[in-house]
View (cartoon, helix red, strand yellow):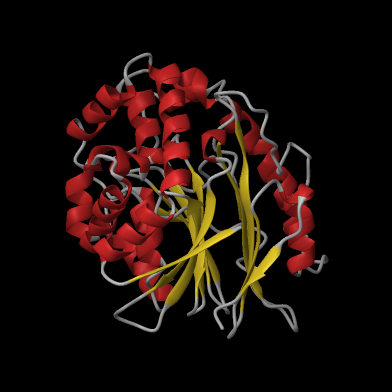
Amino acid sequence: MRVLTIEGSGKERGRIQGQSLKPMISEGIAKWKANLMSAVGMDPDHYLDRFLSETDLVNAVRTWTPDLLDEAYGIAEGTGFGFSTIFAYQCPDEELWYRIFERGLGVDSLISEHHCSTVGCVGQAHVPSILSQNMDMNNSYDGTQVLLRVKNTTSSIQSYVFTAAGVMGFCGMNSAPLGVCVNTLLDLEHAKDGLPVTFIIRHLLESSTLNEAVDFLRKVKHASGQNYMLADARRVVDFECSGGKVCQFEPSEGPLRIWHTNHPLANDDTHPSAAKVLSKAEPVVRSIPRLGFLRREVGDYSKSLDTEAIKRILTSHEIPVCVHNNRQPDGGCTLGSLVMALTGSPELYLATQPPCSMEFERFRFD
């Protein structure tokens, strides 16, 4: 597992990533652009220029998280790629709704993407609070996985951020402790002038408390339909966010355990074309049985759940939860499996392939 420490100003953090990870970033972007060419049928650079010119995502980042915009500029400087390419690389969810709903392109490319499964459990007795996720995305990212250790220059907060080289963050845990996991909810309405998911994740991981993170989720304008599951040592909460609404989800079984996949359960702010366009998309079709599997495994309060039990759930091939790379251009896979034990000395357990095929590695802040 490649672990990279980044610190300093936004530009400095970005340059460290760009210079240190340049071969991995170049590999990932080349595969990403090849997939885009296949999905949209046009030159990917021309397509990405249109994506940015027909949205106002850059200004949203400048408004809400200017330091992270500087980090994107730093990555561009460190790699030699143009800023448009690097910024678009931060926006997999946003590019997806733009492609599908704004341009009417590449619906077939949804065959295997975005199968993320998340589970959160409040600690009981001697078992810590746990937040966990299988991060499933397009296989163009496979082989470029990296764990960023981010040191904040304005506070004592540090964070571990799981991502692909050149992308500022998919999910992670900070030293407060606070964990952040996500699920794409493509059904939900988007906003062309909202803040992209990657920047929201990184900003949340700068929070010193769960309440601070929730306040930001409630006030920011969201570019993409996304589920955010957050946890600290005492609570786990879940919010489905769209371009027009933020709705908290809580299972009927109670607030101590929460599970989520890739369809909305509380937020009805759906895109008008979602039902028609996504009716046969594999991630949406499989999301419902995956949710049922997680509910069966997690929602039964008679079962004790510790980090080892959660790892076993994430390695399941039922539905499947654990997804292997089929090496197809439009395929998806489990890029990483994360289990966070949220205590006074939080621990991150991370597998950077389908978790059935490798041991979890432990990371701490000390």
